[in-house]
Amino acid sequence: MGLLYSKMKIFHFKDKIDSLAPGVDKILPPVQIRIKPTNRCGHNCRYCAYRAKNLQIGKDMNLADSIPKDKMLELIDDIIDMGVRSVTFSGGGDPFCYPFLIDTVTKLSNSPVKFASLTNGANLNGEIAEIFAAKATWLRISIDGWDDESYSAYRAVKHGEFTRVMNNIGMFKKLPGRCFLGVVIVVDKKNAPHVYDFIKRLKDTGVDSVKISPCIVSNTGVENNLYHRDIFQSVKEQTIRARRDFVDSAFEIFDAYHELHNKFDKDYTWCPYIQILPIIGADLNVYSCQDKAYNLEEGLIGSVKNMGFKELWFSDKWKFFRINPSIHCNHHCVSNENNRLIIEYLNADLEHLDFV
Image (cartoon, rainbow, N blue to C red):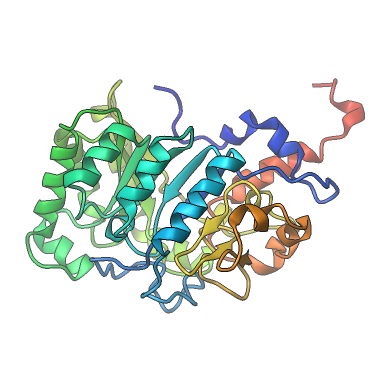
């Protein structure tokens, strides 16, 4: 198994990187697109960033928004025609609540474009599960509770929902196909003592990968680090022990539980990843990134409500440089480290490249 999580992936697309800088007129298609097909969700996670009033992400989100079927299929046609490499479905809501997801991924499965999805796993059954197992590249389920009682408390769902999701996971792994199934454990103070034991249970259930991630509670790195300070060392120790005891050629643990300064602080003035991985929201707006989705004031690139995505994307390049990360992005950013690497690469002195 190669590295599934790597900041170096984008450097396999040199033409794309070379097209990014402000002084280059050329526009190439994004490598990947996240589509948020619906803002509906059957769970109500108490920490959900899109619904938390104190976080900037999702502040302009309308829970009723959903991409119409005809528009979604038009978007997929554009994505295929443009040569986009992959599509990830995410929230907003739960993509598996989208009534036209089967039509959408069936169309993608008959094209060169790879697809994947994030989900809570509640609807991972029936025909849609079979299609994902057979055709998707990966699927990742978010989990916080470690049993029926804790899961219900986290997500305001009926008792027994945790058991149903775990059963869906087990059944999914028995379906024919090669879809890589991952679970992300969103760590907070309540579930922190259960990390090691839950990783073991997930491996026993058959998942291929477990990612350990911190719950985001604030727009500042300092406040997030303060929240996690008392549990940080315990979670790291459990993760290290789990990696020692459980990782093998068929099971991976990715430790993304870290101090958060490197996800917040930014000193660069333009964002390469806007052109690499944009977001199409259920409101038919195109946003710069998943950390600014449904933020009309700071994250909006344009709208596909009355035009195609391809037309919008290849219009004037200036739209990609409206956002100054050092001013507008003083919040969590999954692409912060990637942006730093790309900008350093593009700023290398050409006269000295040979002196490696």
